[in-house]
Image (cartoon, rainbow, N blue to C red; front, side, top):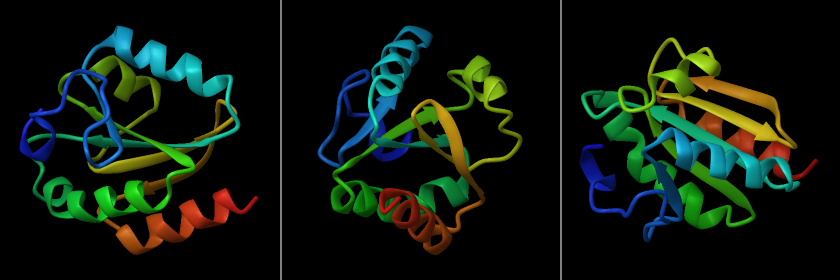
Length: 125
């Protein structure tokens, strides 16, 4: 993955609190642990070549630092096309919000204010 996430270890949390997922095995492990949790998961589907994805990265990092009671995952659609297909991602960036294994929200595009409002809404439920 390009950009600011390239120095993170595989499936490890970087300083931003965002877990970069680089393999199907890492995805399965993170998904399994999430389905056993009541935490909100925000899946950021992005691509290294995507300008809007790169421009919204600082805001996503800030949200991950602010909303520590949520789990933030970053999935590169080119590295994990099967996961992107499973979630019916047709554009990047796409943010899928999941709670207890079920999709509860979806934001398509670099709409950071809408994403923040949606996260706040689901954290307060």
